[in-house]
Amino acid sequence: MALTDALPIETEVAKLIVQTLNLKIDPAQIQPEQPLFGEGLGLDSIDALELSLAISQSYGYQIRSDDPEIVATFASLRSLCKSIEKNRTK
Amino acid sequence: MSTAALLGPYHPDGTLAWTNGSPITCHRFLSEVATLVDRLPEKSTVINLAEDRYRFFVGLAAALVRGQTTLLPPGRAPKVLTQIVEDYDDSYCLIDGQAGVAGLPSVHILSAYGSSEEGQHVVPQIPTNHTAVVAFTSGSTGTPRPNPKTWGSLVAVARHTGARLGLTPTENVTVVATVPHQHMFGLETSLLLPTQFGLPFHTGRPLYPEDVRSTLGSVPPRRILVTTPLHIKACVTERTRLPGIEFILSATAPLPMALAQQAETLFDTKVYEVYGFAEAGSVATRRTVAGDIWQLLDRVSLSKESDHYSLRADYLPEPVPFPDHISLKGSRAFVLHGRNADLVNIAGHRGSLGDLNQKLNEIEGVRDGVFLFPEKDEDPVTRLMAFVVAPGKSADQILGDLRTVIDPVFLPRPLYLVPNLPRNETGKLTRESLLELARQLRCEDHRDI
Image (cartoon, rainbow over all chains, first blue to last red; front, side):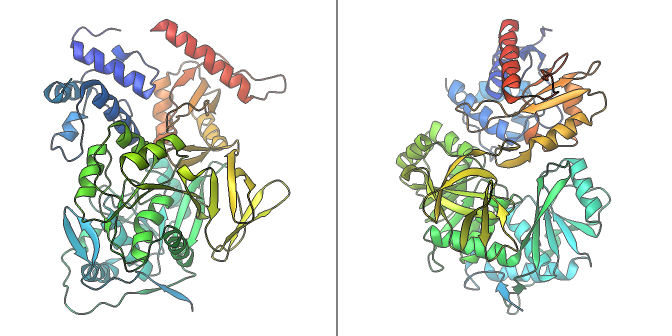
């Protein structure tokens, strides 16, 4: 089920999430607005750390908890991609 | 009656904890504990859910003074909490912001904040035979298994671990920890270790490498970092510029030697590991780069039984079977050879495959199901996988049901729906047949994508 409204960066980051966290889902199944943690995709803090490393390696964006926007950043694929676009150095 | 002090040798105006760059004095801590003591209900057990390390410690201390026992649930899964509450029905909750446990009265730890700091507070003495905490592990029977810890055993483990690491009560070194304080290792190393030596601890729990750097930087030198292989790998990979650290203390999973070496070089420090398990607490240490030999803590001894080793210590009420396969090196050291087949350790959470399988098979609609600990790869965290026969149910539905009964860290990655499990003619599932099934399904995945 490919999503027509997913932006190119969202498709790219969805793939990164699935690969990094070894999820057995098609990256296209991650809805851009679906929560990533808790009830949505069900990720936990170990995933957050692993994902932050992959994002740093791929985009040069170092995630930190004292960023006032951290909660919003990890809310969904779409918000995560917005933060990546804003903060990426590569 | 034998007693041990709640705190080691702090000066009344000495720093007990650091929060947001500000010190909390020993005097203020004792004031807040004294205030909270008067506000606690007349109950025998308490579930302390405080997220903030300092507030958790205020709650733990007040409970100790009142002669209450703090329960440390293995996770926050609602059914796990419900099960524990059923067994300990004279309980209440201590909270510092989050929701409590359904059906239990809650006391807010912050209600003791800003207590009058007038007057002198004497450091309370706690009976050494008082059951200070009960740590739960998932037992093979399907119910959380309680591991009671006396105050005497917590104090003894903290003092012996600290002595091994060269801590002395007079030096000023702050403990910063990435590990949760509700976990046995976290409780021992991030709270009891500093407070029994009169040392400050940081109240936060940094997660990302940048957090670790800024938290370490927010306390004055000298510093100790208590953490896990996963966090060490993250800081090494990012080449995070950590401020000076006396040493790093790692636990919860084996630390690869190469990673320890990189961390020692990159952060100009020493890396030690602690080995322990819920039934006994920390029992041995090693400097990872020095080799694979673990040195037992003082007053701990090992003896060979028919098919396993038993661990004894004068602060343990009875000998404890050693959970992993080991060989002795002299009388005070050992080499680890791997895990008992039923036990798994995911990011420091120990669980029983038997227990997980039972919970999986109790889910409505699941005809047959099994968890598998896959072959180890390079990652510090290897997740479990599961194979499930459940016609008419989706993997998402089963994961949703599992989430209510097991610690999320054990949720399978991935969960495969299969028409049947590769049981042999006697109905047994061998690890080899499951690994083969995993390989086949992985190949199919790669064809799909």
